[in-house]
Image (cartoon, rainbow, N blue to C red; front, side, top):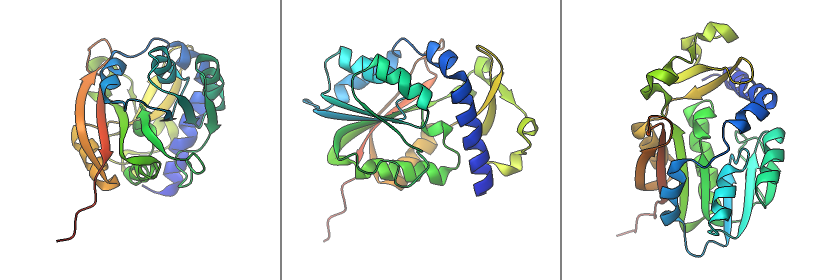
Length: 241
């Protein structure tokens, strides 16, 4: 994907979250059912936790309500959502562009990190791999990474949101396979970019970034399967014979 297309899609999502922060947060108040199934995968104790793409702090609030983590650090590109996160959870929050190679610099090392409903909004597979590699550098060697990806194309209800790329001056040839332009119609009409990242691509991303998959399941939404959750750990280096 050309860099100018990446930037166009990133700007589109930035505009969306800046304009729709209130309506977006309002649609994401209650914890997702899948959150509870992630709890057994957290280290015990878990003195520090990093949430990459923390949004309005919904996952942080859930973890803190279950007294499962100590210090919480949240990172997101949206100033508006970070302001909501600071109201919903206790922690330290940083505004960072997740496409930048140094987006997690100076954040130390963590026993557990989450990146929920984030990867599918990052344009270009190479950028998704780069973010996972950056996360790996901030995870202890036997730590846990919790990710989720929206399975919107598996739902007829969600597929109705797909729009033609011409609406933003692009074509299907400008983007990568499984990239889509989606409509948002809560609190006003808006457009945003998303990629459908299924189990196969999740495995490819994990391998490319140096992770091993420990568990995977689907949950959430009216259908009960709109989020693909994956629990990963850094792949140990091969021993020399």
